[in-house]
Length: 98
Image: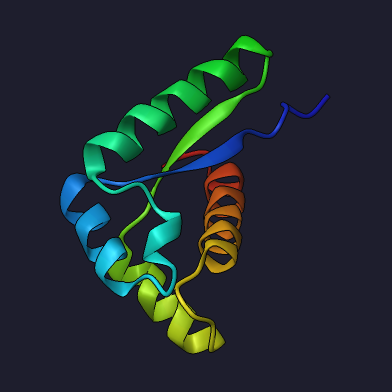
């Protein structure tokens, strides 16, 4: 039996969050501060774990995300961030490490 795959949540350090906000094509869709984002992310993570989901914090480097968006010719938008995080989660699940 294969272990259950984890659901990835994008996880940013404060400096990465600031870079992301500067590069985002939709900054109004993002929390206004790192602290607001962190509180919301932790709350979401706890709620999901409470429902029995396996959650993996996936570290996201803004420079890597921005470069990925450029290669894919995507704006740094909610959709692109979600897709990038999903791809990074698959890599983590295959490797078994973050």
